Length: 515
Image (tube, rainbow, N blue to C red):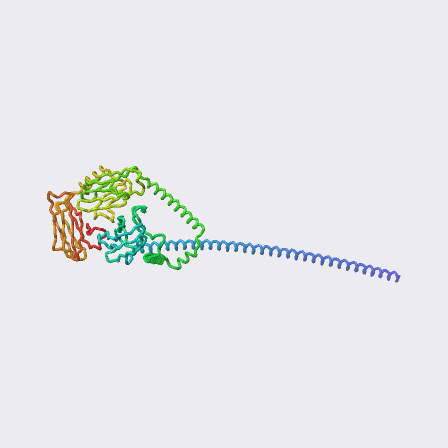
């Protein structure tokens, strides 16, 4: 029995042990499985986290790269804009500097032109092929000889002739320059300025136009003292102009340093091309102008205020008289003169025109070409320079001239008496004022008591049957210093007249009409 009980107990114990053992094994297995799953999940989570961080890092890096690229582009854009702005500013400064320099140069040249030398100095070179026996300078405003060199000048030699500046010399002062050669050739140039200049005297058959000299030194042999003096004077003038023409140094330096852009260069090239084309066109136009007409035709209009007693044309090459109107031409009338073209006439053919008036005034114009022209013959006191004629655009017909004359005559209604108010503005006492009738040569008024400086006197002439619209008087007055002035075409009129000094004259006229 006991054995059965023991056996039963043992069986129970064995069974419990087996159950406990089985239960423990299962628990351990489950624990291991759970731990493994947890580890795997952790690894997966960690991997995902790592991958997320890597992706995020790449995104951040991409954004940083993009930001750098954007910043680089912005910097590049700013740099480009800054360069363009700087280039434009540089170009604008260069343009401004050039404009300033050009204006300064122009102003300096204008000032240099107005500035007279202390003495006129002419370096004369004899290239006529023969000895020059006399060289003369005559003042156009006074008629006085300023210099007369009779010692002669051998062919190929040179000399320096000087005229000192005095209070009467202005920028309008001019001289008639003339010279005579041993062979009898007499040459003249009527509008020589008060200046420093080289002058090469040339033979008559060497002239390319009507001018008997060239404003230049000979091409070779510039070794004489006279030539050196002229060269030194020229160098001094160039230096003065260069000094005056400089704009401020900083602007000039910047303009020099600033390179002209390609566009400016292209424009300059284009401008040069245009200028060359214009020059060529002008040359062609000038050549076309030189085509001579089949005959020269001159319409002379007498505008002198008196009768012209003779009109003469002399060929400058042959010295032959080709026309001589000895019957003269009444004031206000016109006459037509024709010269047929022959084999001797070329584009260099020229004539000397002379005319003489009833009062004795003799005028000369030496370079009349073979052409068709209308020409006004003018009085001595009506000249604006040394030229005694005026070219008009188209020759007027006799009918047109007569119609104009008649219209002018209708306007010339004479007053009942002439009345002149003379104002003394000479700066000194006028000792005598005289009026002489140009037709009768009678003295109609003579104020021998004179007129103090700054004072006024009135003179009247009654009209009678001898007075017409062609009546005129010669007015003369003399100053205390001995200056004697003359005005030859004073009409029968009512006028206020200012008597002026010799150095105040702007031309040949010693009076001014006032309103």
